[in-house]
Image 1 (cartoon, helix red, strand yellow):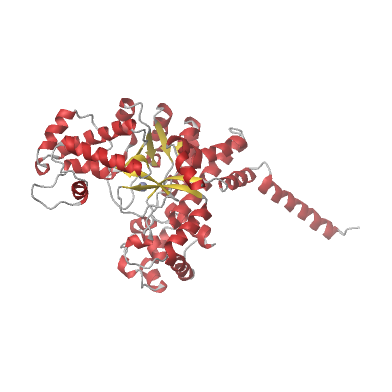
Image 2 (image 1 turned 135 degrees about the vertical axis):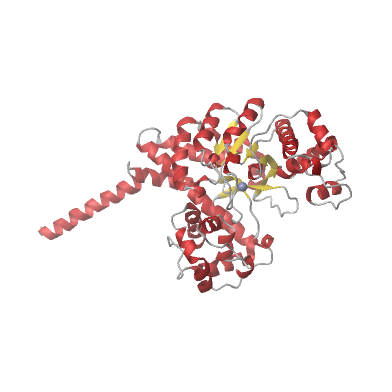
Length: 461
Ligand SMILES: [Zn+2]
């Protein structure tokens, strides 16, 4: 016979067991969340946007925690908090004590932000870093772990890529010099410079640089608009032959998203004049014409068009330039094009959702929203799923290095699972459909829209 005390202990244990069972596999929101979140770890992820660089591309630096902070978004929050920014040259030699005395205060002020949180998440996944915060006591060990792993950066990239569950990454680039490994990448062709440089021809007789140098190597002198378009078409085809699956416009960083429909004759007349004599409005007209031209080519070559909308990286820009509604004319004019709006147009995520709902040719990429603001991502995705069919969403990480990209993926999975679990709990979705939505966001939608089957087959062989 049990004593009063042991009966109490037994009852307490039974209640605890029941509680644990409810949490891990029951019908409560946490149980549902855990199952959906667990399911996302079985998905072979297609990452629709990254800027991956190997450490060697940053110059002759050793690669440690301090470099990773500098080359991820967290540095922008530290600058926003009042930090003077980084001197990259000191990062190889700085001691943890000096690092902390110089940057620790600003770093601490970022403890509440998602830029801080996603990076911690990446370190947890890849380095077993189980702390919630960076402290003077834990950064030294983490810094040497990062340094050690990145000594053989190619092997580390492969290990981390697979550990995180990636299958294919989009590399956003306009450089042919990058080491493009077919195991990991397809290319998102960054067309900004081809649009901008049409209005920035070098003066006669001056030294050729950048795109104009590239053009001369490819046998183009770019004296007329027709020749310029011929060169752009040549490069576009070259990209398609080099695993190019879409084009990307990131020009909101330097101009408005409104692209007027400028007639060929007018663009031709403006192009023929020396660029130095063009007014800002005239230069804009040439750029506008060029993006319309690229959209028509994207339709001809069956390439989706990714567009940066909303918030900007770094610490200072004209936010209004990213307002997604400024693209409305393009969606009406080109029903056969497939436009993918990036970043939910943060903070105008409602406007982006409305565009995704109204236009069959507008898709929404959740890329970077969870890192800008995890909570805004939760609210926004909830609203987006209320109004936009779920075959129209993608996910991308938008980081420069694998540690950041993995943290972004972990954060993205957390956000998607949280939103879906809440909807299942409220009876708005079945759990089965919620699982299907995760498959769609992190993989299947991208395979369909960007026609990735042939690239995935190569990987499977
Ligand atoms: Zn990007």
